[in-house]
Image (cartoon, rainbow, N blue to C red; front, side, top):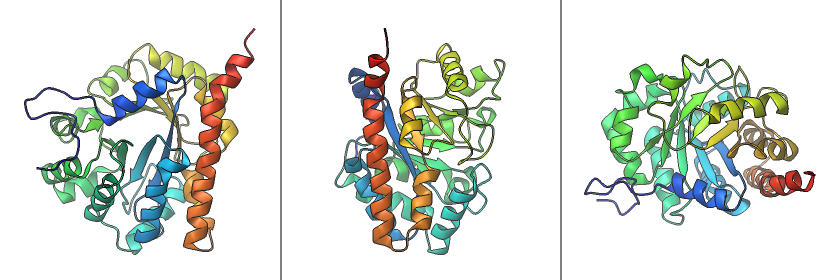
Length: 291
């Protein structure tokens, strides 16, 4: 049996998960979480490992690690290309889980959420995947193409393995649909700020704040906002009213535009540091402007 922390103890009593601990601690600090997305294996296995291991020190609170898939329909061009780079360099589901295992050898606190599509999980074998993911130290899953009507496929078994299943809510999720989306969700709710693919343009802060506040009326889970957030200023604005700010495409762009692996690592961690500094100060700025 792995010594990795699980959400559920052997006697069936639920433990506090890494995600719960993270959000509780940040609530005490009165600041949102910075969530970063990178594709596992992009641009190659070794550089991806360096990128992953350096994220907490650069200021990331929660890591989303993309599981490369050949048909990432919800992702924009940047993340599509990242997935293809990773696959061309031999990244597999097993290697992605191995990355998490190695990360846990030196970091037992930073939550890791695997994000991707159901097909690679199904091909790996659901029960085998969940067992291996739990043993590796995975804390949550975001599976963008598996709706609540199919919770028995993955969501319910994931809970039995102590792995949170994070739901996506979007601007097009209406009041009738929302209860189904939230029913078996855990960890946090990922609010997709744009009705489109990743990397799109950001919506107005006013409209986003209103949407997040409306969502809060229906769930006690933390609410993370992502899609279209690229700059420290945008992250600070959204962090004033959300529980977490998710940045992905901007980091993936750093990898694509780098001339060398060292440059990719430097640029990704540099941008993360800027985002982290901004997110940590965002509510202080907000309070300073209150009269």
